[in-house]
Amino acid sequence: MIKGLFEIKAKAMGSAMTWEQFQGYLANMAHTRRVMTLAEMAKVAAFMASDKASGMTGTTVNLTMGGMAD
Image (cartoon, helix red, strand yellow):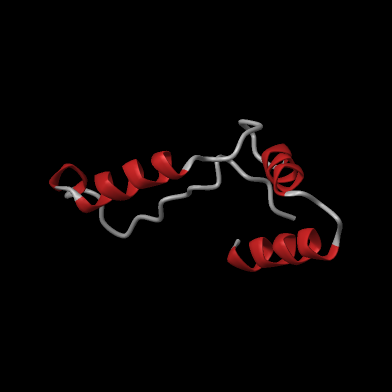
């Protein structure tokens, strides 16, 4: 997935996309049709670092909003 994000970033930088167009491009790749906000990411990180997530072991947290990477 990380490799895919770098490829997407390279495509965006190689085109004449604005930041808003790039966000729209990313949103169209997600099931929710929007990008995750920084506040949402911070809440997930805070939860994962808290005692409330103590039962979660060997877990990968997907923050792609259901992104559909090629």
